[in-house]
Image (cartoon, rainbow, N blue to C red; front, side, top):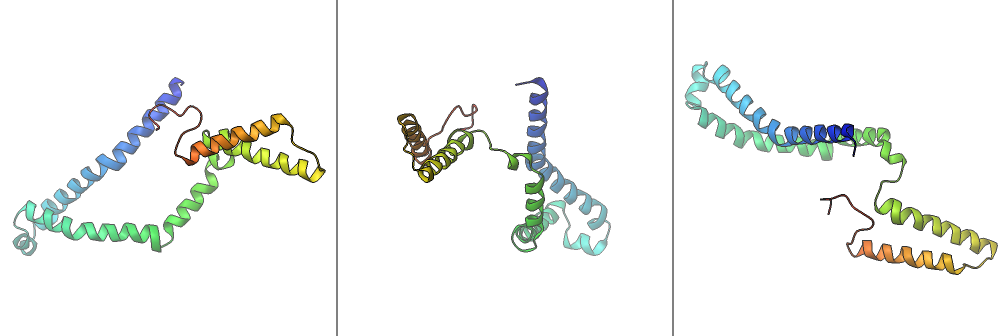
Length: 160
Protein backbone atom coordinates (compact mmCIF):
# COMPACT_ATOMS: atom_id res chain seq x y z
CA UNK A 1 0.00 0.00 0.00
CA UNK A 2 1.37 3.40 -0.95
CA UNK A 3 2.09 6.20 1.52
CA UNK A 4 -0.55 8.36 -0.13
CA UNK A 5 -3.16 5.64 0.23
CA UNK A 6 -2.27 5.07 3.89
CA UNK A 7 -2.60 8.80 4.53
CA UNK A 8 -6.05 8.94 2.93
CA UNK A 9 -7.16 5.84 4.81
CA UNK A 10 -6.00 7.30 8.11
CA UNK A 11 -7.76 10.58 7.31
CA UNK A 12 -10.95 8.62 6.64
CA UNK A 13 -10.63 6.68 9.91
CA UNK A 14 -10.04 9.96 11.75
CA UNK A 15 -13.13 11.58 10.19
CA UNK A 16 -15.32 8.59 11.02
CA UNK A 17 -14.09 8.32 14.59
CA UNK A 18 -14.42 12.04 15.18
CA UNK A 19 -17.80 12.47 13.49
CA UNK A 20 -19.47 9.39 14.91
CA UNK A 21 -18.10 9.19 18.43
CA UNK A 22 -16.32 12.34 19.51
CA UNK A 23 -18.24 15.21 17.88
CA UNK A 24 -21.62 14.09 19.19
CA UNK A 25 -20.44 14.06 22.81
CA UNK A 26 -18.61 17.38 22.48
CA UNK A 27 -21.57 18.93 20.67
CA UNK A 28 -24.07 17.85 23.32
CA UNK A 29 -21.88 19.07 26.18
CA UNK A 30 -21.18 22.35 24.37
CA UNK A 31 -24.84 22.98 23.57
CA UNK A 32 -26.03 22.14 27.06
CA UNK A 33 -23.40 24.23 28.84
CA UNK A 34 -23.65 27.26 26.55
CA UNK A 35 -27.47 27.35 26.60
CA UNK A 36 -27.57 26.94 30.38
CA UNK A 37 -24.90 29.47 31.30
CA UNK A 38 -25.83 32.04 28.63
CA UNK A 39 -29.62 31.73 28.57
CA UNK A 40 -31.16 29.76 31.43
CA UNK A 41 -29.01 31.11 34.27
CA UNK A 42 -29.49 34.77 33.25
CA UNK A 43 -33.30 34.72 33.34
CA UNK A 44 -34.99 34.43 36.74
CA UNK A 45 -37.98 32.38 35.50
CA UNK A 46 -35.91 29.70 33.76
CA UNK A 47 -33.38 29.75 36.60
CA UNK A 48 -36.13 28.87 39.10
CA UNK A 49 -37.23 25.96 36.87
CA UNK A 50 -33.65 24.75 36.43
CA UNK A 51 -31.67 25.81 39.52
CA UNK A 52 -28.68 23.59 38.63
CA UNK A 53 -26.91 22.64 35.44
CA UNK A 54 -27.52 18.95 36.22
CA UNK A 55 -31.32 19.38 36.41
CA UNK A 56 -31.25 21.29 33.12
CA UNK A 57 -29.03 18.71 31.40
CA UNK A 58 -31.12 15.73 32.53
CA UNK A 59 -34.41 17.37 31.54
CA UNK A 60 -33.05 18.52 28.19
CA UNK A 61 -31.62 15.11 27.38
CA UNK A 62 -34.83 13.27 28.32
CA UNK A 63 -36.93 15.67 26.27
CA UNK A 64 -34.43 16.24 23.47
CA UNK A 65 -33.40 12.66 22.75
CA UNK A 66 -36.88 11.52 21.60
CA UNK A 67 -37.21 14.66 19.47
CA UNK A 68 -33.85 14.02 17.82
CA UNK A 69 -34.71 10.34 17.30
CA UNK A 70 -38.03 11.34 15.69
CA UNK A 71 -36.22 13.82 13.46
CA UNK A 72 -33.75 11.12 12.36
CA UNK A 73 -36.59 8.69 11.68
CA UNK A 74 -38.43 11.31 9.63
CA UNK A 75 -35.23 12.04 7.70
CA UNK A 76 -34.72 8.37 6.83
CA UNK A 77 -38.30 7.13 6.41
CA UNK A 78 -40.78 9.89 5.68
CA UNK A 79 -39.51 13.18 4.31
CA UNK A 80 -37.59 11.97 1.25
CA UNK A 81 -34.32 13.75 1.98
CA UNK A 82 -32.44 10.52 2.62
CA UNK A 83 -33.76 9.02 -0.62
CA UNK A 84 -32.54 12.10 -2.51
CA UNK A 85 -29.12 11.84 -0.82
CA UNK A 86 -28.91 8.14 -1.70
CA UNK A 87 -29.85 8.86 -5.33
CA UNK A 88 -27.16 11.54 -5.63
CA UNK A 89 -24.55 9.31 -3.98
CA UNK A 90 -25.51 6.47 -6.31
CA UNK A 91 -25.20 8.69 -9.37
CA UNK A 92 -21.71 9.97 -8.54
CA UNK A 93 -20.18 6.90 -6.89
CA UNK A 94 -17.41 5.57 -9.17
CA UNK A 95 -17.67 2.01 -7.88
CA UNK A 96 -21.21 1.68 -9.22
CA UNK A 97 -19.62 1.51 -12.66
CA UNK A 98 -17.27 -1.40 -12.07
CA UNK A 99 -17.27 -4.70 -10.24
CA UNK A 100 -16.03 -4.49 -6.68
CA UNK A 101 -13.19 -6.78 -5.65
CA UNK A 102 -14.16 -9.96 -3.88
CA UNK A 103 -17.04 -12.27 -4.73
CA UNK A 104 -18.30 -10.04 -7.56
CA UNK A 105 -15.00 -10.20 -9.47
CA UNK A 106 -14.03 -13.74 -8.48
CA UNK A 107 -17.39 -15.56 -8.65
CA UNK A 108 -20.37 -13.64 -10.02
CA UNK A 109 -18.63 -11.97 -12.95
CA UNK A 110 -17.16 -15.26 -14.24
CA UNK A 111 -20.46 -17.04 -13.55
CA UNK A 112 -22.38 -14.53 -15.67
CA UNK A 113 -19.83 -14.85 -18.47
CA UNK A 114 -20.07 -18.64 -18.32
CA UNK A 115 -23.87 -18.49 -18.49
CA UNK A 116 -23.61 -16.25 -21.56
CA UNK A 117 -21.13 -18.63 -23.22
CA UNK A 118 -23.39 -21.62 -22.48
CA UNK A 119 -26.40 -19.80 -23.97
CA UNK A 120 -24.46 -18.88 -27.10
CA UNK A 121 -23.34 -22.51 -27.54
CA UNK A 122 -26.90 -23.73 -26.92
CA UNK A 123 -28.30 -21.36 -29.55
CA UNK A 124 -25.64 -22.51 -32.03
CA UNK A 125 -26.36 -26.15 -31.17
CA UNK A 126 -22.81 -26.78 -29.88
CA UNK A 127 -21.83 -28.94 -26.91
CA UNK A 128 -19.68 -27.96 -23.93
CA UNK A 129 -16.14 -29.30 -23.81
CA UNK A 130 -14.49 -30.75 -20.67
CA UNK A 131 -12.65 -27.52 -19.87
CA UNK A 132 -15.90 -25.54 -19.85
CA UNK A 133 -17.64 -28.17 -17.72
CA UNK A 134 -14.80 -28.12 -15.16
CA UNK A 135 -15.00 -24.30 -15.06
CA UNK A 136 -18.74 -24.53 -14.37
CA UNK A 137 -18.11 -27.03 -11.57
CA UNK A 138 -15.43 -24.75 -10.06
CA UNK A 139 -17.82 -21.78 -10.14
CA UNK A 140 -20.55 -23.91 -8.61
CA UNK A 141 -18.24 -24.87 -5.73
CA UNK A 142 -17.33 -21.23 -5.14
CA UNK A 143 -21.00 -20.22 -5.12
CA UNK A 144 -21.79 -23.00 -2.63
CA UNK A 145 -18.94 -21.78 -0.42
CA UNK A 146 -20.35 -18.23 -0.49
CA UNK A 147 -23.88 -19.47 0.26
CA UNK A 148 -22.58 -21.40 3.26
CA UNK A 149 -20.98 -18.20 4.63
CA UNK A 150 -17.41 -18.83 3.50
CA UNK A 151 -15.15 -16.38 1.74
CA UNK A 152 -13.57 -16.44 -1.69
CA UNK A 153 -10.08 -15.26 -2.60
CA UNK A 154 -7.89 -13.31 -0.22
CA UNK A 155 -9.97 -10.93 1.90
CA UNK A 156 -8.11 -8.05 3.56
CA UNK A 157 -6.74 -8.71 7.01
CA UNK A 158 -9.38 -8.02 9.64
CA UNK A 159 -12.28 -8.06 7.16
CA UNK A 160 -13.65 -11.42 8.29
